[in-house]
Image (cartoon, rainbow, N blue to C red):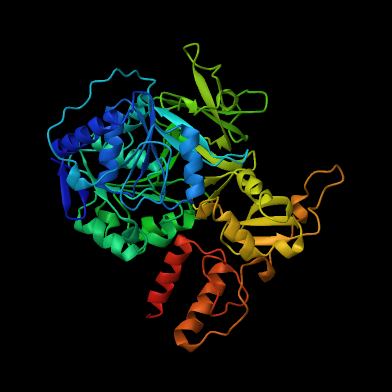
Length: 537
């Protein structure tokens, strides 16, 4: 049976096992031992899945890193997880590393090899996923073998079947890939790999998914509004469409259900610390006045509490902090026992002593029908395009930039698109948006780069000396990385300038301006392409 489909490459379960065993033996020979971390710096591909399985065969934990992130950040993550080895391909963005580096190629993973026999426990770490950290450095969430199995095998909301084909389009460095890879393989279904160029083109994606008879698709909340119109022919053929990762646009879901309903639509919620998602809502209809889609109910094996500031359950309709307990909880934060103890606390409601619950920081309330509503955050953490972002990490990076004395970062949606805005005080001659952006780009991934940089004489304070967020001004064009204005030339440039202005909330766009430097990103680029197509370009 097919386990992986990557373009024209079709890999059986037997071949997947054999190639992973070959690589596992190479890892052992390089010094990898059970319990170690092995970093993977590979694009989304069949080779990546073989590498993940090979690491697990060694009893080690894989740490999938995003090759698109800045080299300095990748090195910091390698140091933080104390990686015993680095698996990469010939396009590795890191030159010299102080650990065994194994360049892997598909053609070289042949020959006879036996999968290693290692002793594991349910608490053995399967993988580590890094999320943004408020202290200025990312934190690694260590997820156990038991938690992965509890999640991947607990598909009672939509049981995967051997005949299913599941699209693999999540960034491997984030935990949505756990569903797409391990839930698929553990049910004997087939993974259909989607490469990055295909993912960024909704029409090409629709063609790819249709050609490979994909039956299960997970689209993040950020992708759904811009993608579903291009997928309208495919959607009714899907056994299940899953979405989540951020607030889902209720209007888009209503339109999708009215015009191209899949056989089943699931809204999924859950932090990395509770293994991908632990609360699910089957969406059949959307009320006309709905602003949000309910989070839903906990999966079997997971427990959810909404607690007030005294740790007591809240009544229906009353806001409280969402806590998650059960078999899907992560072990904690890698090498950070204090932070683990702060966020993973004893569960006073558990039937068995010694169980823990995770404080999500999300605010929610119970509905009368037994489902949950999401209400926001109780801290500064934000989600931009599905990415968890701690503004404190960006602020710490900004304070290390030349000329910056004070910095605060907030999420604003003045333009109709949620974006990060940095407010800065310091040496005005050194606070040009282009300069700051270029310095940050060496330290932070693209999704953490502010779209605008507002210079202030000093950060505004309330009478009691705290930051006055209400007094932070909306950014104008001076806060953007604009080039000296040169008028667009020709029909296409004028059309592009108009569309950029609408999408980015910029008053005037010149022919030398950079879409991404003005706050553009891949999701907005997709909207731009779609509008150009509608206009006949």
